[in-house]
Length: 89
Image (cartoon, rainbow, N blue to C red; front, side):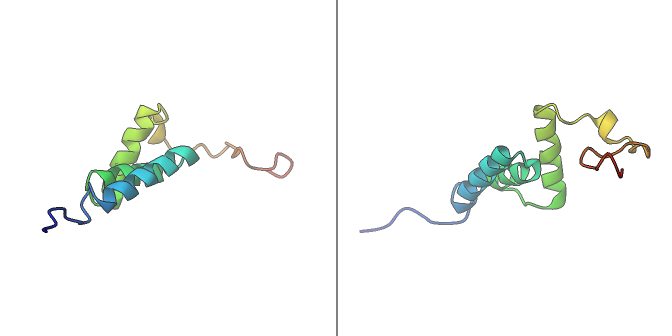
């Protein structure tokens, strides 16, 4: 009896499953970086910074959270972060 199935770590194997789980957990927690890493991993790509950054930008554009004109703009110095205490700044 021969075993014709192979158990390798290709995108369709364990990496694909881990990528799907990572993508879903990222979606559930609204962690776009984790979601992007999962997508890259599913498609057999390297989870290097450049690949993940491109995937994250694509996700943010899909979710309408990314605007290149705004995201490239410098942050104004007189803007108070939303989580800052209004009494102390």
